[in-house]
Amino acid sequence: MTTLCLREYAHIRRTAIPSSAFTWLETLASQRKKGEAEFLRHYGQSLQVRNFVGVLETPCGTVIEILPKIADTDNPEADRALLLKMLNVVYKLKPRESTEASLATRQGSLLEILITRFLQEVSRIVHCGIRSDYVRIKEEAAFIKGRLRIAQQIRQPISRQHYFQIEYDKFLPDRAENRLIKAALRVVSKSSQQMENQRLARELLFVFDAIPCATQINRDFSRWSAQRDMVHYRPVKPWVELILMRETPWFLQGKWQGISLLFPMEKLFESYLEILLRRQLLPTYELIPQSTLHSLVQHNDKALFQLKPDMCIRQGRDTKLVLDAKWKRLENGTDKYGLSQADFYQLFAYGQKYLSGVGEMLLIYPKTSQFETMLAPFHFDDKLTVWAVPFCLERDELLCPDDMLPRFFLSTLTLTKDDNRE
Image 1 (cartoon, rainbow, N blue to C red):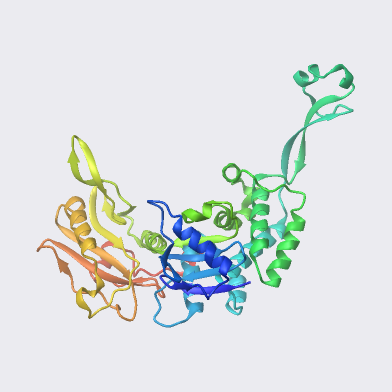
Image 2: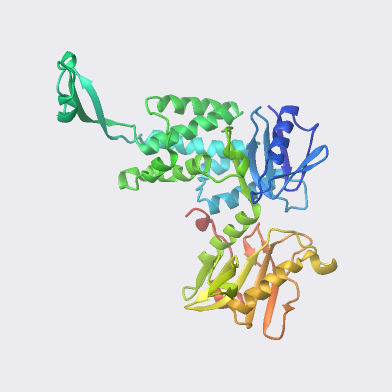
């Protein structure tokens, strides 16, 4: 099996992976439809990955791991740890101390780390006990058991009237939660290349052998029980959702069902910030993501060109602060710092509609060695200001103007250990 580790916007060369894998990726890149997310872009003898991170498995078994491009050094372990931390927060994947300690000493790809965590959660469920439920059984039998199905019995042909159409309840582990876990186990058992993960997956599949595999994923997720006796199943649910339900780029919706956990980095960064800011917000304020309160223009009594800032901080009906998150490397000291003119046009519209032309807005970028402190303010006029501020992903700290923090937030914007494990 070939494993390729790269970062956002890196090129996959034809000689770097098996020809079958490269041909498959080329086909995917050429089949993208209008309006669909672009994951790959063709450049002659290479393919450039776009702003997606995660893991992609090809039909021939090649695993491509894509890590965030933010660090200035070539340190895949640090990038992998950063991505895992963000996934833990955004998708509520609760790591356990023993798991984190064991993974810290183990070299492995992101795929194997995620599989290990999932298998450990399933093992804990098995240790606590697989829950069963009453299942309605309908069958034809030579004796009456349970309840006779009168309508079906009347329609019995004469030659089979010595048999009874019956139904009864039987206490079985065939319930939605177990069916979904088995479906996820089947997926990871085919994708893992580590001997320990393969062994544990086989053992767990043997435990779940008598349970059918989920075929109607959405229906079974809607039946996932929140009752008290199912509390030990709760930690595994996000993992099962991640494996079976997570939205992936357009081309992964076809016949190939290998593990493909790909996340748009822009959306992941935005969601991570939203969760962090919401936790630290003063109780008198409210954080609104993707507000749709205003549009750019009115035409024939209809609102056109909706304005949707990433986040707004509101107090009652009044918007106090507009925030826009950008997953992009700024370079302090260069011409215009790498800022986008289109972003400022957009912010100007936000300021006029959401702040009535008076107030402050934040453009939030990840902190790098080239962008360690906030830039001098950008003034549209003497009443409307934009601050371009860095967010330190190592310390989970927003480096914004000192007078802005106590106005809106409880303390410095630090994600504590307990916050990470909610």
